[in-house]
Amino acid sequence: MKVADKKVVRLDYTLKNTQGEVIDTSEGAEPLTYLHGSSQIVPGLERELEGMEAGQGKDVVVQPQDGYGMPDPQGVFGVPRGAFPPDAKLTVGDSFIGEDDEGQALPVRVVELREDVVVVDANHPLAGETLFFHVDVREVRDATEDELAHGHSHGEGDHDH
Ligand code: ZN
Image 1 (cartoon, helix red, strand yellow):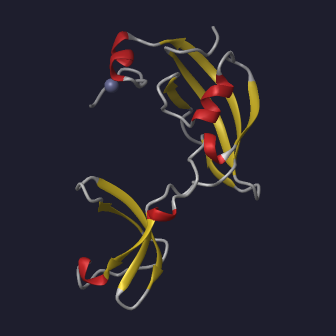
Image 2 (image 1 turned 30 degrees about the vertical axis):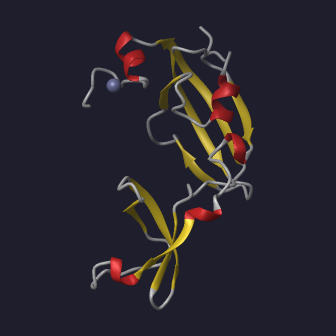
């Protein structure tokens, strides 16, 4: 069976950055499972997996525009210190969930601490990065009706949402 829309794919992967550092890997953990064609994984990787079969492996280079996009300069902005609890210990590199103008949850990272302002970055940490994947396809199966209705893959027997 080949990877195509409406198939559930189980794969092992390693993701490296341009410097060759491992950013993420399924090694030592569970393989990644996703529903093909539902944008659960970055578009550049999903496209390259199309047509592969269980047992096949591949190196895939994903350009930023097919990965996590380019960083948006407007995603970097200052938040007044007063918006944080007075006893909050802030460190560059900290991540927390803020709120956008519409009150939606917005994950951000602290990039700079000024006297009265905390500069945060709401861009994805891998925005602007070229992604170097190695993937090994372990299993390709038809998605269940539940999975198609939900738009994502389900684990074996568990469904807790
Ligand atoms: Zn579901």
